[in-house]
Length: 140
Image 1 (tube, rainbow, N blue to C red):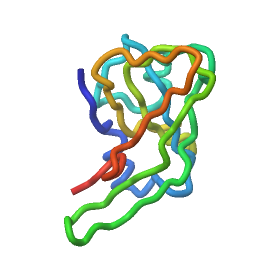
Image 2 (cartoon, rainbow, N blue to C red):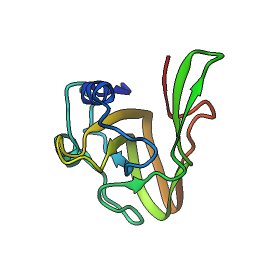
Image 3 (cartoon, rainbow, N blue to C red):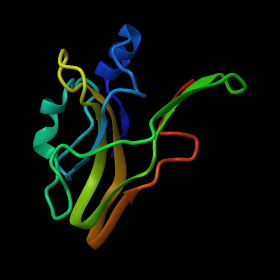
Image 4 (cartoon, rainbow, N blue to C red):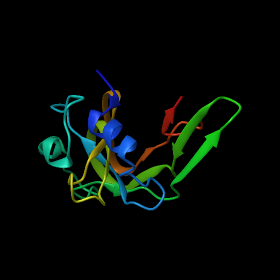
């Protein structure tokens, strides 16, 4: 069980490659064979572990309401977006992977992997990831 930010994301942030507000940031759901490996670079390196199921589209869902804020009180930068949902869903997911679907070099760089701590199953319902109220990612 591990969550983390991919090394590719750390490097691309420093290069200014990501535009978390205007790029297409995707959230894909992963099966139980997915394991966070910090050195994985692009979506192609983890896509074989993506789930399949009713109500789920390959490649994941596009995040909406993306925002980046600066918190001078707590000395951090925060990325947040609206909660993401899949309706009419029947599947089991173990992890979510965020990646930037906009860049072509490197192609679809990975951002973060979030471990759900076990199987999360939905049957003929809505599967929602409710992001923490403090944001999805924080750099402090």
